[in-house]
Length: 240
Image (cartoon, rainbow, N blue to C red; front, side, top):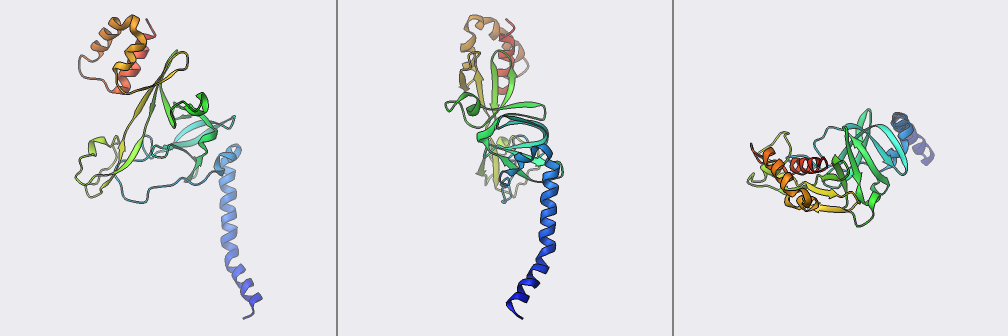
């Protein structure tokens, strides 16, 4: 068989596959519609090893949302966040592999009815990195970042740190540990990482006694989580 005949035979075999790939690409971009620019990023990386927990912000379900990206607003998107890499991932309505949005161009987004901010793109390089969920948005803001770290868990001692209600397999020894972070944004835009509940009170010294009494009443039946404590404190303080 001559070289030319071999080349022609190879093309005959490959043409259907190439045509199918082109059709898939065309369908992908058609579904993306006016958001096609968002789907030019690299494919989202998974985690091939068996694991407990989740590497996503809350869970694997992609939620409806919108993104402010590179100065433009895009709506009707399916979004999730890889909380290990702090990657915002977007999917077409048909599902399939998600694409990672370049974090250098993401200013903010809505996901599942919640607002998220990329603080460094909005407030400069001195701001904390990654994406932050807005828990309370008043004159001041309370922000939360979900961080997940893949660790070995040979004896199951990290199960309580999973921060996820999904299936747990005792025979799997890799686990994504949930490590939330919190931040307070003052009215003047100052950003303060919150490592303890007591830090917040420093911003409301003039009403410290009244706020302390209110928070004690809220905790009369049990200690509040860090998330709810910070949110309730600032919400109440701004009413005074």
